[in-house]
Image (tube, rainbow, N blue to C red):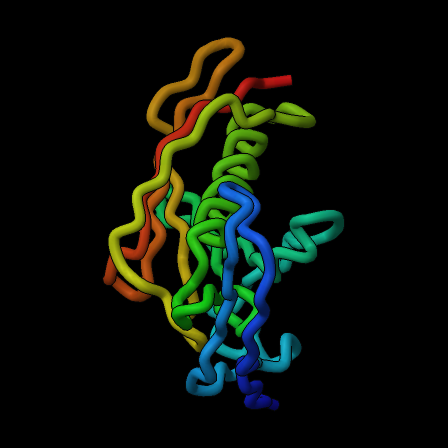
Length: 173
């Protein structure tokens, strides 16, 4: 079930934290953002999708699903809900980076068989918007693997439309 939530219309006066001069913070009323019932999000996923959001921040950021692999490409899905949006109504960049990080970490653990892999570095480029109702798919590929490190790349797409691309390095622990 979807709900409409109106953003607030307020203004606050105070002191600027940088220059100590007067400051006014304003928020104008915007079009409603649709908040989707989280239980309805898995309806559009392909058969075999497994919810991997089991606890901690991953649970809060998701739900994130593991999909059936496509050859050497590991696939994950994130159905977009209102909580994933920024103030402009697009998927927040931090959500995209979190989705890429979780997907690439899961892949690093799976290909190494290690109980854990830690993110060493990750870069992300945002190339298109995601919207409420979209199902983002993260397609992860292992670029190189050494005894202690895994190099990965990921494409986040909606259908075939690119939303973000990421590369990263994971330490096997």
